[in-house]
Amino acid sequence: MADFALTEQRLAVTCRRYPDFPRRPATLVRLIKHIHKQLHDDANLTLKPYGINHPEYNLLMMLYGSSSGTMSPSELADAAGEKSANITRLTNELCDKKLIARSGSADDRRRIELSLTPQGQALLESLLPDICKLLAREGRQLTVSEQVQLEKLLKKFLIGLAD
Image (cartoon, rainbow, N blue to C red; front, side):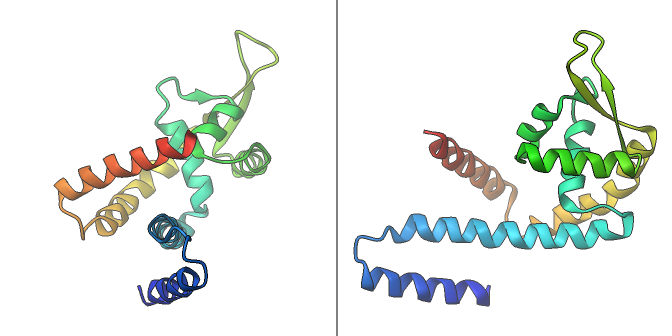
């Protein structure tokens, strides 16, 4: 959090120099950025022994959580919040690692479907206990009630970004 104290100082200077600068929204955006970086770094550290990184894990989890077990590349990009160019690179890497498979859709030959391989599912199931510990550790400062409240506020914030 020492890094964020410097960010707050810079925001204060910015507000003095430009009084109309929206300090509170800027603070929220910077906090989210710092949180994202820390979560990403912690996840990468946890996932490294398994041979995958955080973006790859996210794609695997989107497929794992899909009721049909398959997703198109565009659906996967949407679900994971990745750009389509990045999805191509990540899915190529996951295919090379034999963690996901590409196949043509039975309904539409032009449609590509991605799915977990048995090796991909086994990898996820082996790393999920460590991810569960990580998530519990990351949320430990907030009560369940605070987590529910924060979830509602973040959803509201996200919806506001789409307007």
